[in-house]
Length: 190
Image (tube, rainbow, N blue to C red; front, side, top):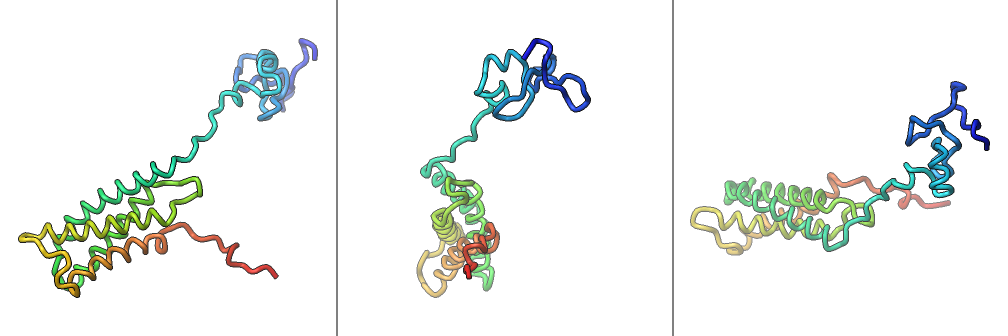
């Protein structure tokens, strides 16, 4: 190419470098297809242009220990807040079971939101197990926050249903509000 040659734009005018608009474009970047100037063509050659070479690669997914810790801390924080709310409804007829289930839902929400996307795409089942454990701890704490405190397991027919409701609430989160499952695996090829 000679010094007067260059890339012509759609309007018939000489195109400008995508990174340095004050310079005329000499050719097209082989990586991203943007117009690039002569200094960029000499500097980067087949590597591309200043825009593609300096582009940051996406961040790697967090390690397993990090998202497990984030999920656990978020679920515990929600469980402590939920314990205070659930303490208002200990020994009431229906709300003694409904509120721990809602605490379980909230713990699962917080855990999956804090875990974020993992290397496998979405948060795995272990995050829901962590949320269920936090919801059970929150329900147990609500029994202790009642003035005078409650025994955590006696009588079992009266104390265990709220714990079970907290676990059911945590495991209901992915079913009710989780991402839809792919139907491609459900299809049978003829």
